[in-house]
Amino acid sequence: MTDMTFDMADDLPRRATRQDFDQTAPSTSTLEDIARARESARIPRINIDAFCDSPDVASVIENAARDRLMSRTRVDVHMGGVSAAVEHYRQTSTPNLVIIESRSEGNLYIADLDRLAEVCDPGTRVLAIGHANDIVLYRELIKRGVSEYLLAPVNPVSLIASISSIYGENRSSKLGQTYAFVGAKGGVGSSTLAHNVAWTIARQLGSDVMIADLDLPFGTASLDFNLDTGPGISEAIQDTGRLDDVLLDRLLTQCGDHLNLLSAPTDLEKPYDLHENAIEPLIDVAQSSIPFTVLDLPHMWTSWARNVLVAADEIVITAAPDLANLRNAKNMINVLRQVRPHDPPPKLVLNQVGMPKRPEIKPKEFAKAVQLEPITCIGFEAQLFGTAANKGQMIAEVSSKGAAPKSFGEIADILTGRKDAKRSQKKALRLGSLLGMMKRGSGSVRK
Image 1 (cartoon, rainbow, N blue to C red):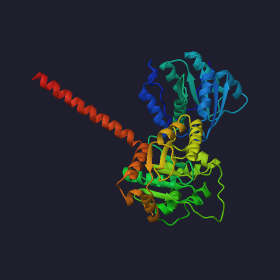
Image 2: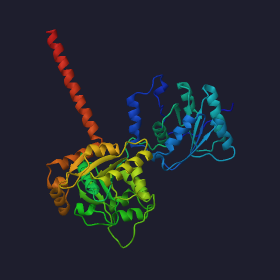
Image 3: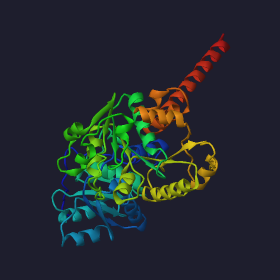
Image 4: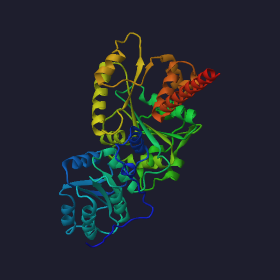
């Protein structure tokens, strides 16, 4: 057997998916850590070939290939394992990444991969999937230059996290988060919600937030913040080859502490027929330099708008409690659940609840019909919202008291994870109090 090794970059992370392949199943916290890794996972434009021994693993890889985080990759799945891969690459060059599944164990698995190494081009990475829970095998594979070894059965989320780690784009510092706001129907207040939540995040966290007004002909963000429009988003998407964090910063207009706006041109001299991937470079640049990006989407279902929704970290659908909104919200939620199977469902907000003299669908009935509970219901307050809009102010600037500002704060906490952090802190405080009481109680007994 010829001792061959794959190319191995010194800076590639080496991580056992199950710590040292112990005999126990991964804990719930481990699975939560893997899910959280999606927040910082990013996979470059690469070609991936997978050669599988079992239909189950092939199905997992095909499932992962449909994930939004894999949108920049091309994935081809083949059956036949190592033998099929070796035969295939005798006649063609290898892609950026080869995923190999083998049921072989120990030296047989190593021999299989040595055969593969003989036909691999320089620079090709290999992710191995095996059925042997063997730390010795793992270490030997890593020593030979295999980028990662996953123990079957695998799941799409851990597979995507492994691919991201191989290419060094699962960074220690989190990528900026993107929150897409869209209305189930025009005029339901999605833009108002987006702007007020963005303003609230900037105030609460003291972190930079960018609002991107994607309604190019009719955007209202500049009006809501009482600002003059600049070149804004039209220039940002005009020549994406020039777009970087420096240019983006130049195009932003400050509209508050830690809050900046990428305004819409609101110019009707030309139509805005965007390419399906027109917004993708903007989101990439924003994520690399800005902690939070709020995408204010118009109510439309074009290819570019759909792609923006699919790519977002979180989606907020705003709906009014009537039949048209219910139908549209249900359709949007169903589609987004299908195309984002490994992400949480969209967040639903019911707005303009309690409008006088308007027949309404009750929130419980609305939630049952769309099979999604709203994260909050915002009451109809024409005077408050109208005053804020006419003055170019946020709701909390007009009146900091009341239900609406509280709802915006709740939405901000849910999106940024502050709600979970607050819940954990409360549990820790309760546990500390309980332990203190137990200590005091045990002390009195000893007396």
